[in-house]
Length: 202
Image (cartoon, rainbow, N blue to C red):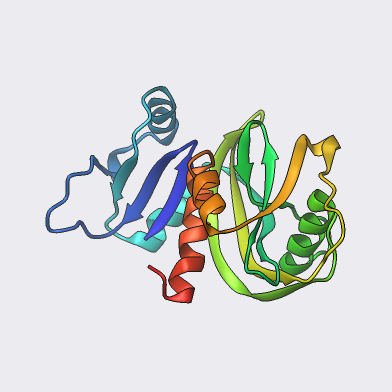
């Protein structure tokens, strides 16, 4: 399956339905994508299933409706296994940003975390997951963000990249992390849950 966020509504492209499905279901082959997206924006729904006959073919056709913007980001842990958060637009977020010409996605993720948070001594532990998030900028766009689990033993003062609208950067313990996720984006919760899955916590 593939998961695409439109704001906090989650579209799930799948070729099978759960036995006891209670989610709204749309048949991919019958949709006008533009109308479908506008309806979701106007009438947010927590989760929607897009039933596909051929999942990979439908994914390709679905993505053809968007300009794909590639980005990289990190879920960064310090030596106390606290999680690094940024605060922007009154929401807690994880650092991320768009790739530059000639960069590998790993280099993008490391650079963006460093720039947005004023942190160094970063290392990538492993790939976590990829998220897709819809936005409109003169055309329909889909931000494809590759997320990595990172570590840093940085002990200096964190510096938010204020020119990017970031007003606070802070490491949070588990209790504070769970509270921050209540005021965050749905795709950030997905990234954190993926981290928990890898640690065997879910």
